[in-house]
Amino acid sequence: MPPLPPGYTLTLSFVPEADALLAALLAETPWERHVFKLYGKALPMPRQIAWFGERPYGYSGLVHPPAPWPPALAALLPKLTAACGQPFNGALLNRYDSGQDSMGWHTDDDHAPQALGGLASLSLGATRRLLVRPRGGGPSTPIDLPHGSLLWMSAESQRLTQHALPKTARAVGARVNVTWRWVGEG
Image (cartoon, rainbow, N blue to C red; front, side):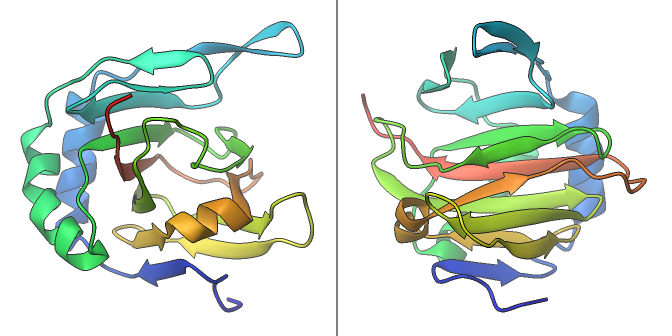
């Protein structure tokens, strides 16, 4: 794997209890599949999502109300805060059931309530490849995200790069990504 772009740090085996955490999140999370508009067309979101956090969180015309932390995620907060040097008060969960579920090119710095810009991205389940490229396009850097790994993306990385989780023709199993963030009042 090539070197990570500046502002990205990958920690393998961050969550030793990853199997149990994945099973709990798949079974107990109230997953939603939203519809969004793209060029005037209503399209189903190519993944399922859930939000847990102290404040509402919005993007792409969706607003998630505050929702209490599941115990398994709440238990990870101290370890995550210590590892990243930043507090977190919310987590967006994305569920990818197959290689056909995906996320297009985006950044996570366009949310007005985002007071602290760093993101911690916990991967559970099937390994998927995240692509990172400079804002405005250019060659991408692949980052394989294995089960139990944590990818730290600094605030500066969100200003300079975009990332995507493209579809894959490979047979892959279910994956849950937990993207931890700090959402300020707004």
